[in-house]
Image (cartoon, rainbow, N blue to C red; front, side):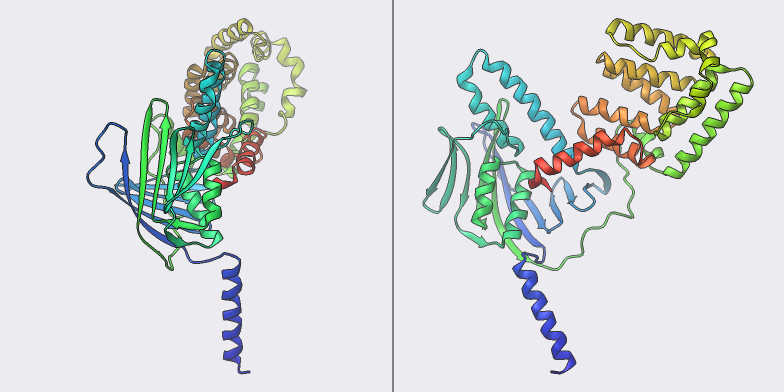
Length: 439
């Protein structure tokens, strides 16, 4: 056998195995999209939607712009009117889970007075967000009508898919269902059955109920085909869309820094603390030591331990140490007041006092006041990783998951080994494990 024949044989064999394993060229879909609300006239001109189903990315583009979900970097890229924004892929599923739990708490409260209504609401919320409540069985009825696969809950239509359409590989079927999850939603039980069908429906209709609003989203397939494409790459493009200032300005600034700068700045803070200690300025000294810790994480600086007796003998520094804990709301408020009274005496380290005040305010659920203090501290020193992590917690509690992950990502970028990163790392791992259909 000649060498070129051998090479051709290996190429063909490789192509066979790639096909058998479900790895194929990206699938390009073109849809017409119509959205309608009961009682309201449907739009006359359908939206145009282009979708690319890749094995490790998803792309869709309509009149509002282009979205690329990258499942390798776990980043979402948004381009609209020439402007580029980037956010964590976890922000999408993170918001869904947080809002889902919020809705479930409301449904649990309703169950006390109207138990007969709650199951239907649970199914509707699962269908809207594309995620399951593990404790609830969904009595969804599957019907095979002429040329249609129909799903109902009680008397309500949830989704229907035409049985006509292109046969899909298992990989492409999984990618199509993943697209539906992100673009419109869909009950996990319905999407699981659709994936088993391994067929690209010519027409899809999902009826979504969000609180008091009901919307039908109809997708009509215009064109489909496999094609070679260059994988989207945004690695060299910097975002130019950020949250409103001051957070946006701080985020732009902090994203330009790296861990090496944080390490150096922490060392500089330790040096400032040692110099202030020698000069007898014990309150600023302790605050500089704490600032190094807040930037880099790890163990408390040894200087805080070795100089403890001197710190405790100084009235102002002793007040600092006794004000770092607020076990009750009353104690927390008292500690915030004491820390604020120390600001004029803290000099250039006064921003560290704001961080401690913000932490105490978080304990008593005053997130807005805490957020403002964290931002004031970051204006002075934008590379305090712990404050970025705390800011992420604040925004996540306000259901602003995209901003929360921006803050968390900045904190982890600045100090990858900071112990506060562990909580977010575990959250992301949990989201991947519990909701694999989004990844």
